[in-house]
Length: 321
Image (cartoon, rainbow, N blue to C red):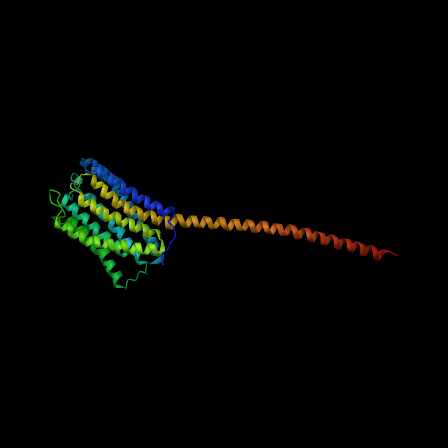
């Protein structure tokens, strides 16, 4: 039965980040700002800001996943560990292969860079599809073995192959910026995996109202949206390059925000509320004890006075002739 609990403040915060990112990117596209061509130096300067942010987001997810995997040994956290590591690698390779880096990197080139971007799909699509699994990680299971081989060996080798190959492994765009057939093939492979993952996360979110599931849904939507923006990209120095990459990073930001709110902020608030409740109950118990102590103290005092009076009367009576 679906959980009918209303969205709370943390959920609305995540939704607000998602809406803001999409809205700002659409404004840039509709207004034509996204199609302004930047000088290579300015593009490199912008990358020096957003690339470390993207790596930092992946690093936070890595730290969180490592901690949770140590505690719970869940398959989803294992998948997120390798997602984070490969995301950091892919972001770094994207930076050194971007045409704006031609004066600094021997690997810089449009075709090679677009091929590296394709590696993002090899990382994101399987992660989105399998990170919902909450069962215990067991290295003896075929799925666990496949995940280790794919994320621990195949993905890094693919990324390095795309980087070190004398010629681009395959061209997703022509020299004129036109999209090739390979791009359509890649999209037709990855998009169904993304949409299936969205359906799985949405079903889980309706049943449990878990904020991490909500963040995963919005993150995957942002990643699909980023792929659409890449499809519209016609020049590596256009501002649109920063727009789609920012949308990709924002997907990571949603996961980080949900993890932080669910695992740190809310438990702290719950613990604080519990301490306040117990303190209030303790104060009420203290006042109740003091009340009864005063009452019984008064009654016992009266009883003792009566006993003393009878003893004095008895003592006086026994002394009489």
